[in-house]
Amino acid sequence: MLIRKYRSEDLEQMTEIWNEVVEDGIAFPQEELLNLITGAEFFASQSYCGVAYEDDKVYGLYILHPNNVGRCGHICNASYAVASYARGKHIGEKLVLDCIRTAKEIGFKILQFNAVVESNIHARHLYERIGFKQLGVIPDGFRMKDGHFENICPYYIEL
Image (tube, rainbow, N blue to C red; front, side):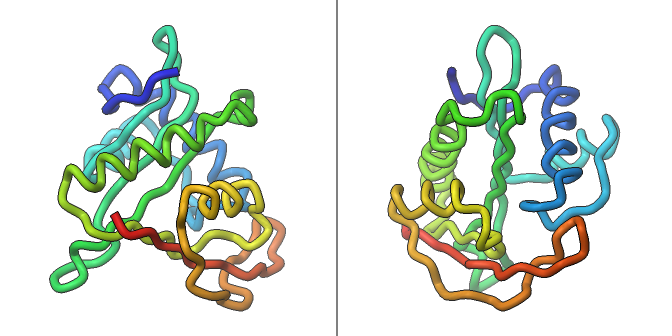
């Protein structure tokens, strides 16, 4: 499994994987699904998008972009999506590590996650193992797909 910058031929698979996570309704704040047009625009608007691929098949992706503007523009944010059929193969870890490397190369100084759902223990354990620090807990900060609210845990790592 290799990680590289996305290409236009990856867009259909990337959109499918992204939409799968959005439809799950337990990790991404987005509620609207992407189509090929909006997906192409969305991924092109990021500072960087990386894909985990093997044999021309995309298994996961990440998006990287500034978390804020101006005096806080050195802080970036990222989101990760792995296809459900590929989970448990440490693809997420490869994506996060590549994202950290890429963020440094672009010139970001801090990678911050604003809204890691508290019950997303696999992501939280991964981030903590890599060296991210939890900033606290925001009570009921995330509305799950079924309508109930869960806490979110912001994380950051210095690059």
